[in-house]
Amino acid sequence: MTERKILGVCAWLADKFGLDVGGLRVLFVAAAILGLGSPIFVYLILYLLKPSSY
Image (tube, rainbow, N blue to C red; front, side, top):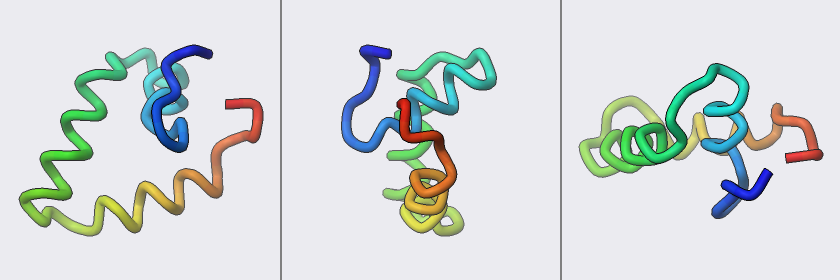
């Protein structure tokens, strides 16, 4: 796994669901800027849920 940038959450989700990692990162950043829901909170929860191998 070489796509890891910060905590590896987007790379993990992209790998798990077969999505484009760049698009997923853009989606998280756009949601954080626009204040849609709580993307930073969700990101941290996903970090705690992802396996440590990522």
